[in-house]
Length: 157
Image (cartoon, rainbow, N blue to C red; front, side, top):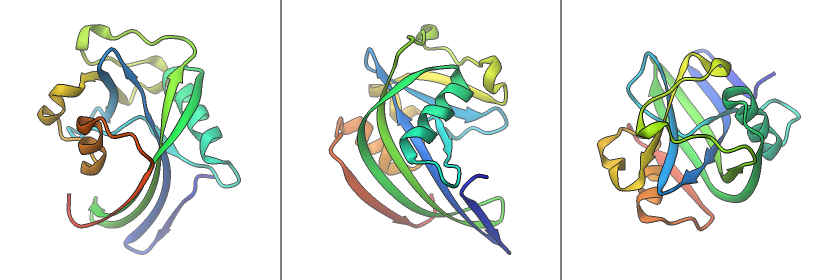
């Protein structure tokens, strides 16, 4: 069971996300039906630690075996999505893939494991061309700032 709880018009969500950088590009993904991007990852299951969850999500979504290298950021985020008030706690980790993932010539790509998602390697210097949530993650990537930190975001994105 995922660590997500629905109460009337509110949702609490606990997720993990991967910061995977290769040749100056960061891997991002979005749902096919949306235009906003995020970093790949997913919900933590009850009773599952964050690092194990991230490894599972990367295997499920991209068929990648990964090493979780460094804890980077905790983002506690309050926002509205689909007419629900969301309280999300996201843990971000730097990872490396044991089996390399091709860059796909900077084009969007899908994989059989996660056909509802679109992935893309985005050059760090072109991040301003994309809507990437949460915004603080985008700023940290642009700055090249990978020191552990905590961020509270309590405003509309």
